[in-house]
Image 1: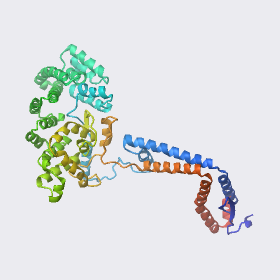
Image 2: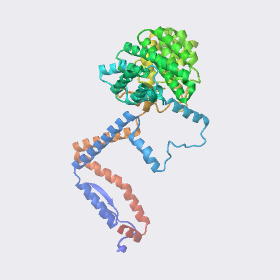
Image 3: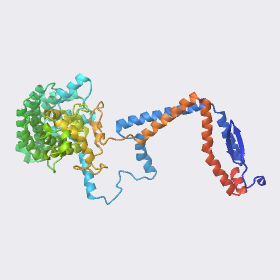
Image 4: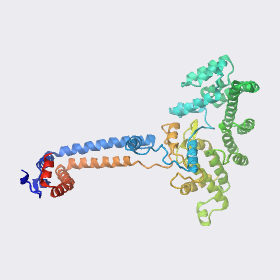
Length: 539
C-alpha cells in the first residue's frame, strides 16, 4: 500500500463553481478537505447574512458596554480586566508592586505628595443644607450632594463635635447618635430631643445647618449655639489640665466654638454685612491661630475681594501663599487676579504681539500659568465655557470639585476687574505648552495626580459632566469594537443585497486563506519519507 504512494506528492483537484481547491494526497487529509469543500458549497446566502448580522450585533453590544463603562469609570473594562486578572496569570508584573528597589528619593517624595494631594478636604465655603442645598432640590428636583459627600460630612461632624466622654452628659449622648443617623428627619428629631434636656450647642448647629430654610433663621440658631458653646468652652478650659478626658472635652468644645463663629461670619457675608464678616474672621484667626484645618483665610479672602480691599488681600496672600503651606485654587487664582488687575484694563493681544510683553504683563501671565498648572479646570468655569453647579461640601485639591467651588464664589470678582477675563482667555492655554510631557514631571508644582477623576466622580452629582485632565483618548478596545461592528454590519448588508456575489467572494477568501497551508503541506510531503508521511496520515 505504501508503494502506491510515491515520494513526490500527487495533486488532486476538485473543481466546484469555478473554484479550485488543492488537496493533499493523504487519504485522511483528502477526506477532510473534501468534506470542507462540500460544506462550503452547501452554505446558502442566508447563512452568511445571519453570521455577519450576529457578529455585528455582538460587537455592537460590546461597544455600547465599553462606552458606558468608560464614561462612568474613565477606563476600558476589557483593558482593566486584562491588566488586573489576566496579566498576573500570564506572569506579568503587578503594577502596584515596586518594580525597582533603588527608586530615587525625589520620586518617592513625588509619590507621597501625589497621594497627599488626592486627599479630600472640607470645602471652607460650603453652603447650608437647609437654606441652600434643599432649596435647590425643591426647585429642580435634583440632589446636589452625593451620598459619598454627605457621608464624609457625617464623619467630620463626629470628629469635631463628639468625644469619648459624651455619655456623661445626656444631651451630648443623644447628639453623638444623631450625627450617625442617615435620615435627616431622624437627626433633626434627635436635636430637638437634646434641646429639651439642656441648651446643647451641637444641637443648635444641626438645626441651623439642616432645618433652617433661610440664612436669617440659620443665623438666629447659630447665635443660640454661640451662647451655649461659649459656656461649655469656658468650663472645659478651666479643667483641661485635670486629665486626658477633660483635655478631649476642651478640644471638642474648641472645635464647636470655632465652627459656630465661622458659620456666623459666613451668615453675615451672605446677608450683605461683609465688613462685619471680615471683622469676625480676623478676630477668629487671632484667637485660634493654630486651627488651620478650617481654612478660614479663604473665607477672609473672598470677603475682602467683595469689599475690593485689594491691599488687604495681598497681605493675606503674603502670609498664606508660602512654599511650606498647602496650596489651593483660591490662593493661586487670587494671586493671579491681583497681578492681572494691574495690566488687564489696557491689555491687548495684538499690541502685545507687536511690542512684546512688559514686565508687569509678563508677571501677570506667569501668575496665570502658575494657577492653571495647579488647577487646569478653573478657566473653563471662569470663562463660562462650562456650566456651574452648586459646590459640594468636600473638594479635591487640583480637581474639578475645587474648580467648581472656587468659580462659584469668585467668578463675580473676576468680572469686576476690567479686562481680567480677557487676559485669562488669551493666555491660559499657553500653560500646557510649558508643562513637560509626560505629565509625571510637572513644572512649578508636583505632577498632576492621576486620582482626581475617580474622586471627583464620587463627590459631584451624576448630572454634572466631570472635567478630566489630561483629556483621555478613547481606549483601543472601544475603537476596535466600533470598527468590528461597522465592518460586520457592512458585510451583513452586502450579503443581503448581493448574495451570489458575496458567496463567490467568501469562497475565494477561504481558498486564499488555506493556500499557505496547502503550500506548507506540499513542502512537508517533499521532505518527509513516504512511509513516515503515510503513518502520520493514518494517525
